[in-house]
Amino acid sequence: MSQKAPSFQHIAFVASQTLEAREAFGQLEARYGNADPAQADVIVALGGDGLMLQTLHKFMTSGKPIYGMHRGTVGFLMNDFSVDGLRERLSAAHITVMHPLLMRTLDVQGRIQEHRAINEVSLFRQTAQAAHLRIMIDGQERLENLIADGVLVATPAGSTAYNLSVQGPIIPINAPLLALTAISPFRPRRWRGALLPDKAKVTIVVKDPDKRPVAAVADSDEVRSVRSVDVSMDHGISLNMLYDPGHNLDERIVREQFGF
Image 1 (cartoon, rainbow, N blue to C red):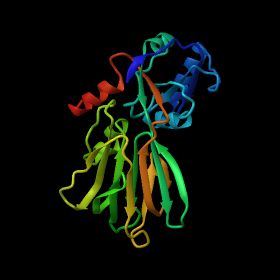
Image 2: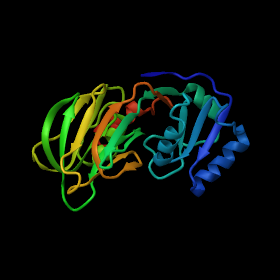
Image 3: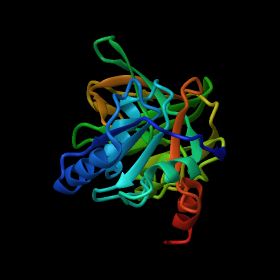
Image 4: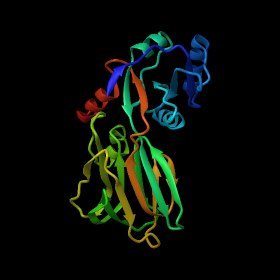
């Protein structure tokens, strides 16, 4: 869903530790000031996609819109950098609303943990032996035994990240879908994953967690030696990302499907 963004006066800047990002931070702070994030109308992130993900996680429940400018390595989630006309750009920007994934894990010690992911929740084998995984959707078994290096659940925003690298489908940003994608599957060989409604609850059960341990990762938050993992989209949290007209995330994902 895209809509016109309001006017912004109080801007909070955050930056990665690269020289390029720190220099940009100094230039923008001198021009526009630097509001406390708690009182800011908008958060402007300076860096690459890693910094954008960190910023989205940090301010996930704040409700504040986030506008990224590329001062890093990979800038898929970022706008172009310019010191000039920032308030005008913010006022003209459009909002893309996203929701994170909620990962709930049960480990072999019986401990429960919860983490959220912007891009994907991934399960990986921890040893040289392949993982044996049972996959259930909304409580119904759909795959009795996936033998693979792992499996992931990706959001539309995350569908062009690791999901794409393991041959998963690209999902338009506004599509109410999740990608369920195997990581180097051995059996069944021809299983190509699934597209699921974004209201689905995915449960992944590790079939032999002692002999074949598996780790679960929500973006960068890792839980080792899991017994089972529940993944669902948290529609109660909205992430408001600002993009310049003509360069929004919808357009970038479409372009990615045609090899740009």
